[in-house]
Image (spheres, rainbow, N blue to C red):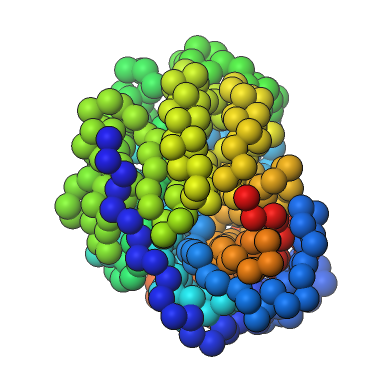
Length: 515
């Protein structure tokens, strides 16, 4: 099948600028303990990494820009009122529920605004040719979330609400002390122990309509396990579909059972959800009534691709955002696209159709990739996937070996771990970017250059959303909520403090030999 339309090649570079990136400043906490407000902190310096090639002294004067683009991943646009959510696992693991996830749409819209504001690549000044998301664009594999995500990326009005159109129905006004209740009504742990604020009007503001400008550059989409599986782990079934669109929702679970469920998922077990169904049936009397909504229905792989092909979501293009009618007919969610002259992009599908949050790639896709890399032997190839190398448990060794056999592979760019990490692999770099939902909430600008001395450079620069660093008390505007989204994520109980990565995993220049 024909590849999607090429992205515009970079034109004459402007003067490089760190403005709007983490080279200039980063969100930093104020105070030493308790709930901490944020403000502007020092930027992260660029680290030159020579693991794969030495840095020539004259490369800055000789360099030619080959590509300049933005990597987004793990946006986790979330319907927080969805009946098939696992907030109740928090009783067994504190970090299993995020107190800020009702603001995921606001956070993504603010990131779109930041990308639109960038003057070009911060290392080269080259105009940004495109953006690409590498999966977990949504959280619950649900039609409403997919529509919100597509609208945020392509532009338009979004009402991040399902169920009752007039009021919020979820854990944050449940009266259960397990969750943060921003408007009071419960003696919750997050406010009592962690100092979370009281914010009257928060829940109404969180489900109020907002408008996204949409990206000003073409963008492409890669599928992740949360886009394809219930809770990012469980394969589809009629039972789960009925639960998702129905009127009963479980809000709490005893600590021992919640912890056991979390261990089962992390261990890659019960991917068909047999034990989960028994657990939900056993606790049927604990469920509460919510307003049913057919927009919470899960999407099949074909329906997910078809949503991208809807003209309502074309935005700056390309039509389908990488997915084509031919791919749709085949049920295939992997494709290639022309990045620029001499540069090819390849987007893989590493989700497991049989369930499991970990990665999977089958023989047919590996053969397709081998043919694609062989046919484009003279191109520099950028490979995109949701899962990072160590998380592809089925077919991962074969994928790594395949990429290692093709000298034209320049970078493997992915997400899934919610952590910044950059790893050398023989002749190419693996670039894993943090998420938009957990702190730090980042995207990454990537610029590829030919240094004119037998080497290439990949410049990576992290960017935060356009939201103000300091969340102003009482500001429940879309920008104010996006700022609060970042602040709450920083303060989330149980969050990992390792997701930022080391200095060499953030703003870098990655040298490699030109094939």
